Length: 460
Image (cartoon, rainbow, N blue to C red; front, side):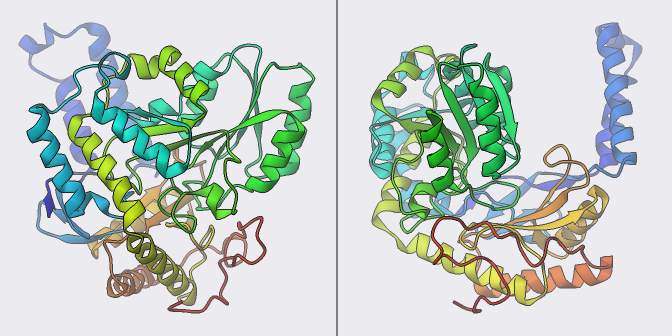
């Protein structure tokens, strides 16, 4: 199955020349452009130049074709796709693709034509019910984007409330927190002692409600929150847990139910969000699930939901079918976990320092400087491996890293090829810095769970 998703790197010179060209248009066109806009065009062109000079600029991918496990550039070059968020690769599953086609034929239209509050159709409600069933939740609520869904804190929290947030949370959670009227506290990532300190400080204001906000599996290192300790603190300080679990659902846990299942518990998190663009199907959208009272309140008072166009008909059909596949065909999760273990064990055997828990589909190698990360990404791409260089503002300055998404599109032979290429690039560019030993010990709760280390058995 082929999908026309373009992905060729645009050079900085191309972007810069375009900006300069637009700021130096003909007099006739200039007459139609306001002076403030002309000034702004010149300003952003200058900022781009400064950005490039700082070493933080990295190529943007556009205009390529996605075909199975490969990204095909316009020049015909093929790259193994270790950049995708669609871990299970269900976007190419025949049942999922056919469901989208059949929905278009049935409804005779593409979009939902309005907001979820005004024009929620039966296919939207059916999809939400399937998702709620998957999570054994009372109710679920779709959003056209999880960035919007994670801004629920704007609606949830008032000036009487307290939000305590992990410092490494996803940007969407951070934006929601910043835009809320609540008192805000930030604790060091996954540091339960610092979290308790911030909770104590916040309780001095006697908040009406307290929200602890966290990722489940963190997107920049594959580490996982200590949910058991987090729940104990939440109960102690009468707080709710709001968790973004998009890098865990479909990937982590015996049946892919995410962070709660990873720890062998259920409903430890009070409000959970997930991106449909990750393991589920790779299409636009997200959802939150929780109690019926909470979801009902959100449908009537959440502006992001009320004032945004709802998920498309075909997307809903593909999402609904993908969840059915996840429940009925466990072999997809089994294959993903095999690929993850094989890739991480092989990276460790090759001497790479990687971060996170064994089960996470994210594999991160810390590089340090943005310039070095960009050089690695460029060299890997030229040699046929597509990966993501995570630089500022995605991560803090000086903490740039390479992120690889292990997925069901690649085989063990592809993984071997990727690691061989990565090793060659490492030698060419002069190696990588050591990062806190061999890996970050981020498995909590169940002592029987293995940490990533060089003692893991290969080909497990």
